[in-house]
Amino acid sequence: MLTHIAGKTYCLATPAATIGVYLIDKHNCLLIDSGEAAHGQQVLDFLNEQGWRVSAIINTHAHADHCGANKLIAEATGADIYASAPEKIFLENPWLIPYTLFSAHPPRSLDNRFIVPPASPEVEAVSPGNCVMQGVSIQFFDLSGHTPGQIGVFTPDQVLFAGDSLLSSQAYHTFPCPVVADVKSQLTALETLAESRYDHLCISHGGWVDQPLAVIEQNREWLLGLINDVLGALQGQAMNREQLVSCIIEKRKLTVNTVQFYLAWSSVSAVISYLLDNRSIKTHFHPAGITYTAR
Ligand SMILES: [Zn+2]
Image (cartoon, rainbow, N blue to C red; front, side):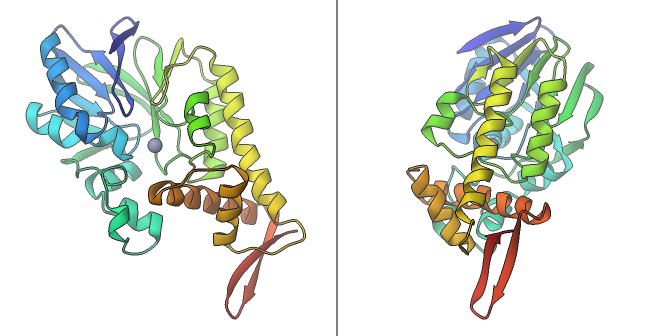
């Protein structure tokens, strides 16, 4: 479903994620993300019906539900693909995604369409700041935290597409654990979103945000809640990383399949790293492994 946001900016809901559409002129558009590979042909057919050719795809980040259709759309239209330098690495080499989640060559169970998108054709790296793209003045926001190089995309109509930097209540209640790769950066991204000026905010899972400041604050509380849960579990007892992940899964009653287990694993790992760096917890080295306790 296509929703008009402002001026030449629209969002297009697909079953996996909401895509941004900016009309360059009557016949050409920019996409902000491309959605999951399985829905790429549907997206392309819909845009063709409108008479809109995709000139460029800007990816907020390299998760499969945001960039999976890059290859199909770029091959069909000749669209250029843009992303931040860190996300470019994953877009062009998606096998690295399960590799980093598992920290070694991953088992086949992690090599699936929810984790590994088709490799994108050559991606051009962009940096936070202003950029003229296909004659359109676009601004990129550094929203790293959910992934190492997530960007927000701000259109000339004052619409900010913020990727997965914010979760909707519905998304959080389906899986009540923020998915974060870098906690410090994510807290900074939330500050950036709270302090920036825009008329409209769109997120990938939920679309147009009605009350941005309330949603930003809610996301900050969810992240602080995860930090507190990890810190609380380490008060007076030592745990290793695996035990902490199990503790969070049980406390939050997460229903986990293989993919969701490793998303929780990754988020808990990010929190451990954050708490070690700000000296809230300490590491104990044992002959048989590593545990952590609160300081
Ligand atoms: Zn994501």
